[in-house]
Image (cartoon, rainbow, N blue to C red; front, side, top):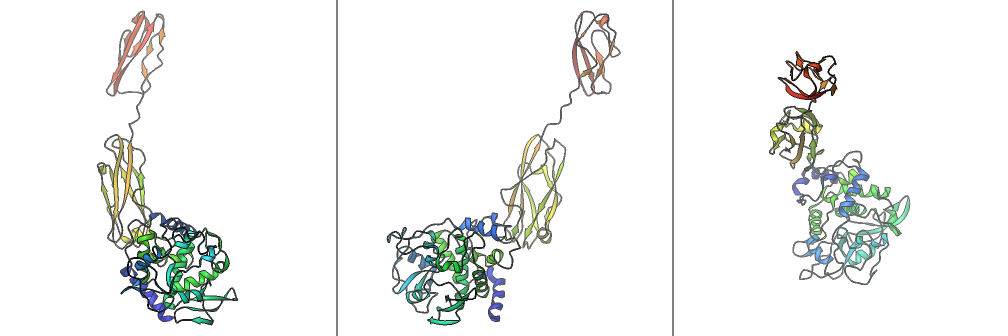
Length: 457
């Protein structure tokens, strides 16, 4: 046990060296920041829609040649040490071997030949075709393990040196269980993690209720959760599983994320359920396509807004790079942040100062050595300055010849403002001097000019 644990710790430190290349963009950034139930459901939505592979010699066994093959055309059998070979050609089943449902199909009520023997309609449920838990198996071992739940065998009734069947205990009660070899216990655990995530909406029957429960979370019973987490920790992801994951993905077009992210199960059921999950090193609060909007401004007026940058597992300085036709209208208080500043989360002052009216855009790229760059669109709008309406005050539209003179004033006091027109003297309008008729009174100052009409009767 201690040796296994040491190997596990070493594996965690070097996993990135043997990890297969995950197809770019397969796992969306929307998975970031989620925890336990929400995280599991997010993966469920990603995994559930995939390509059905026809069950049998021309479909399933074709995929096995990519997912479960040892060098030299040997079938990789996790149920026995018997050496068997794939048949010649790209299809065809191997004699004395079965297509084994690692999670028994009776657990969700499916049966053989539900709708005839046609490869694509033979079973009722999608799970019965899913290659992420279908494996080639020695027929004799498959028969012996039956549809028993996984478990630790205390009293052995049958074994071939790889597969062990006998009495185990679930909830304190003796039950028949199937125990795989130590080297494959993690493989089975991660198959089951995948299964209860992809098919969390199924109803479980028969012996399936020993390990699964009808809900979207946790779906695993306490017994299954504890057993599978223990096995997954003791037997870390191997190159065999990585190759198998890639082989199935080639045809089925979905992946087992518990192989791609070996500690994912800990975030959903284990020791990290209080922590948010992230796909890897990167900026966590922004993703490419997001936009950051500044308050409206006017030409030549600057407005400021705080721009927060958060990351995880950042190992180098993060550069803030501006680009775009309007980039000169935007600025940031710093051009880079240290890895520690980003991992801790830092607010950066951002400024928008337009030099013309209208909508302005620029792109801020956050880049570092060990992360995928994130491009955020900056937006700002320059609105026209408020138009001041200056009007005469205290001046009527109509006057009589006998009315007294009226001081000419505006709604704002303008320096050096003077008036001119009929009957105007020293900025006073006298109706009797203007005479009958319509008169235009004009004003002007260094700030502007205007006019108004009055009638004398």
